[in-house]
Image 1 (cartoon, rainbow, N blue to C red):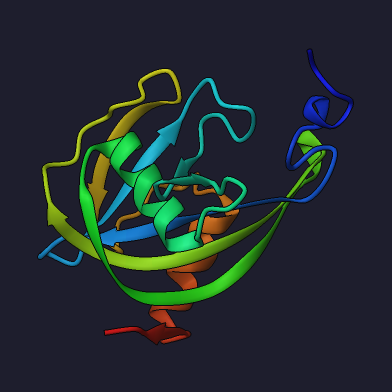
Image 2 (image 1 turned 90 degrees about the horizontal axis):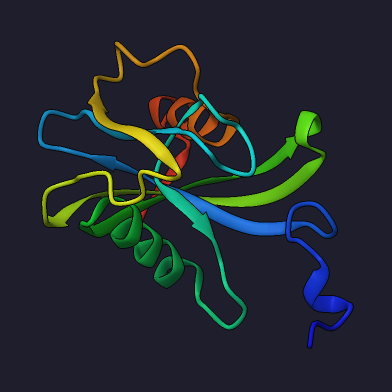
Length: 151
């Protein structure tokens, strides 16, 4: 039986907590996925990530999301500023934690075709035009040196 609380949706009925990881390869390219069929921002390119479950630590949650979405393990080496991700069009508000990482193991592939239609590497000089806010801000902060090196 559903309780009143279980009907509430993060990001819509209360501020959601999530995040993503800007993943770099050896060529200093970043891995992005184009969103499709999602609850917000269809057609925009985004760094992989997702929501954080109750009781789950942020880094653990984001590593789980990366494994689920693109099938790789990552080594997190940096932390960027958080994003107040307010999506007026969809009437959503998320607080997103933004990390920087490299691939630890695996080869990226689209493991959630119902949520995104493409996964690709991009040079920081040739990014797609349609980036979502959290990805755009994380890249801007990375290029400006506004991040904390963790390793």
